[in-house]
Length: 160
Image (cartoon, rainbow, N blue to C red; front, side):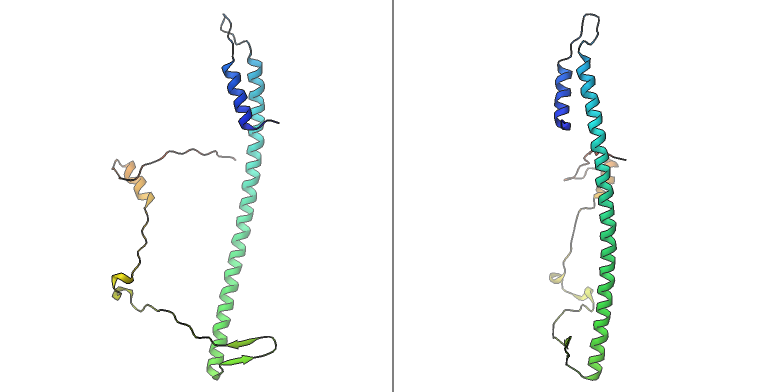
């Protein structure tokens, strides 16, 4: 079976080789009709396959979202229980707790806690900037010139 690309090439060749008689009748339209039918059948098969892939992608994304939510829930529960353990051991003055199935101990670390970010010197502030494409698009549509940006027309195949 020919690919869409090959069928397109054959269709173009058939169009270029059309012959018209003195009455304006197309003499060799049968080849064109045959290729047109093959193209339509091939396009339909590809579109059905695309729909199948889209459905599979959605099912995987839905499952991924469920797993991510479950993972976050488990992580929150684990962190809560760690905090409870730490508080209990701290209240009892226990620095290390050793058993057959687990060992609990405290480890020192450092982290920075910002108490008031408005008081921080500017060299310690990071500002992430990115283009506001929605505002840029609206400005261009309103007739304003936005240097470094333009509206680009795109086309995409919609399969339903």
